[in-house]
Length: 285
Image 1 (spheres, one colour):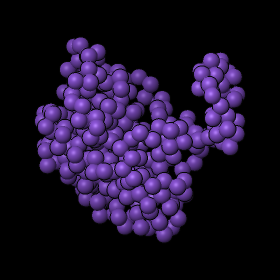
Image 2 (tube, rainbow, N blue to C red; image 1 turned 30 degrees about the vertical axis):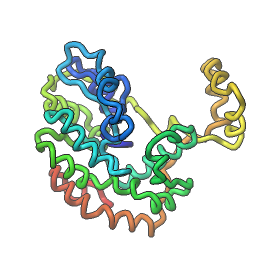
Image 3 (tube, rainbow, N blue to C red; image 1 turned 120 degrees about the vertical axis):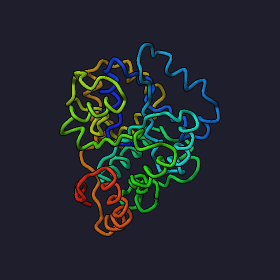
Image 4 (cartoon, rainbow, N blue to C red; image 1 turned 90 degrees about the vertical axis):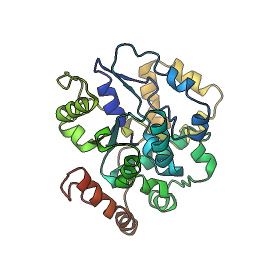
């Protein structure tokens, strides 16, 4: 349940298991979004109508651990109220790299008009200019979401440690088999299940892009989306570089901004490492 920390990859892999069912809508965001939560549970529960004999059903809303608008606090309480026996898998990665990837994801979403109707955008809490370092300083949510120990502490107010499983993206990438086996054991499903396509990239930022100058003009033409859908794959592939710049590198930190962020995260990261029994320098900030 963490944005840009491998949640999509983990959900896709676990959904291969015959005893696990994931909602086809990966991020229903029921507990983190007031408007969605206010509509009740009927639409949410309908997302799991496809489940049959599976013993574990779930979803992968990354917003349940976001600091924006105190989402992780309201989510922890609401999830407990809805299902106090829930088992929670919390995906994390290097705190600074998570901030970089989260920022790129927001830039892409804004460029594609995917955030205009969200509570975050309407609240005024989101203040994105397109300058990475300036945006980090102007958006507390970007940094605070990487205070993983603070998030875990909130969930521990409602759930026991036995109900919380931590998955590190770095471990999922380097040694997926034991990570998946541990998740299966945590979920009380067969840990010997043979997962496939362990190295397949999922939700990669390199597959996304923001509009070029020409792309902004072309996308404003009425019927653009219909035209793109009609194009054969080879033509769409040839056309894409003209209208999209692909994300190829993570944004660079200014030394002063990086130090500000490290100062914010350092003690939290140290406590988190201790909680999960990782070496104190597992993530070098």
